[in-house]
Image 1 (cartoon, helix red, strand yellow):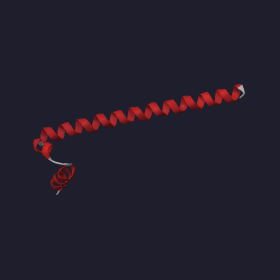
Image 2 (cartoon, rainbow, N blue to C red):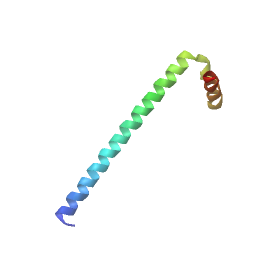
Image 3 (cartoon, one colour):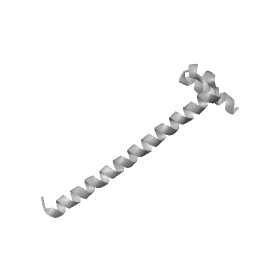
Image 4 (tube, rainbow, N blue to C red):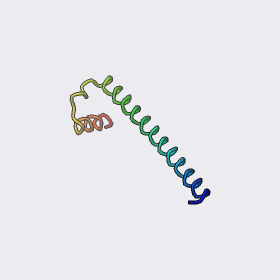
Length: 65
């Protein structure tokens, strides 16, 4: 493997690592947002804590009507 090939491979790996870190940051931000939104939902509608996902979806869709 030549020096240029090694440099190219290293650059490719650095780019992949950067993209992976960015995806991880996005996932963490999404997870945080979903948790915060869920907490607000439970605060405003305490009864939703006892609902399963289908019941919660029906409840929220009913609010939209």
